[in-house]
Length: 517
Image (cartoon, rainbow, N blue to C red; front, side):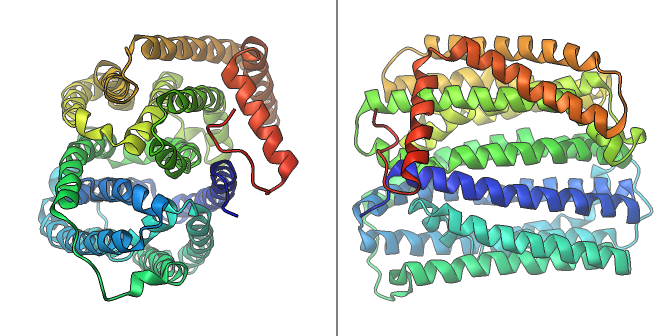
């Protein structure tokens, strides 16, 4: 008997969450040793190189998202011949992409000095950069098979592989730093485990889906190729916009403020990024389930699922935003010391940016599951343009906070309403006004809960870990209690309580599908 969408979705969420938490714990341990044994400049350099490579990854141009969308239907129908044809095309595309990253990335080496305000006295800086290029490029030769595992709603397998390789990677990097204090050796370990993770995923995919090893592959029809090209063109704009909005912050800070401030920023970014990674992985494990649901063509059920996911996304991101706002500075004080703190105004801007990015995720998830990303293909370019035009002068004026404020402005004036408009017009066939009002209500709820929680936390006059623990208890109890009291009669709330009860009662047995109630 096939597993239901509910079982697969929740299993993927649980395994993904567990694996990500292990990885994050090791990241913080590794970051601690990194800062103590190297320097803040190395930390800033690492963040800068990572974002440069994100920009170079523009050569991927949305191929992954377009190919995954193309795989949903044949996977749901068990059409192995179509899957083989798509995976062969996917393989060829990603080989070209990996090769392009090697060539373009290496060619950019002489221009590093133009991205750093004051070039640090770090030996072999160009070698380090080329190692980042190599680390990014090699992943594209294997990672395409991981997408098929996800499409079969078995992402937990890839997550376990990631968890094991991540644990080994972080542990060995820490040992290497203690023994050698060498950034070069640190990067060599990273490259080794990047290769191992993707190679193991490839081997597992070959064993689970032996048809992938077949040499008899049918050429895709002109119609299929035309649809894929159309979606890649649409995702190209999305990819460019996303990279400009998310991956140029480090470059702007490095160029305008310097590597030391970039190092401070990267500590906050590490925390927020990892919280975001957990939450987005939890949400995006539902993509395959939604893709399967969408193929059934019931708009009312799809809309109901969307509203349920949107509500839970608000709840989770609201809670996490409040925790970030109230706890991140006390945590960094204990972890690294007060010299690594940023002002609370900057933390507030980071928090708002985190929440807005989170509340967008259900619309983006539905966009990818329904394939309507072609209809908002110009939105990311407008978003990226607004972000760059606004962020640079705001960074001059406000420092680090200005970078994220520019991102918030681009989200509000471009991303949020366009994404909602496209989804509601081209898929739900309804007005987007109620959706936007719902988002506004959720944002107002966040501001009210965050303000009152921060006030309550400031009543605590303690120090050290005790202060952090008491503040954490306030953050856990107060906002969640208010949400439960005020939302307990909402159908979305009742739906997920019932869903959780069904899953617990059945304990791994087949449960009702995600959209049934």
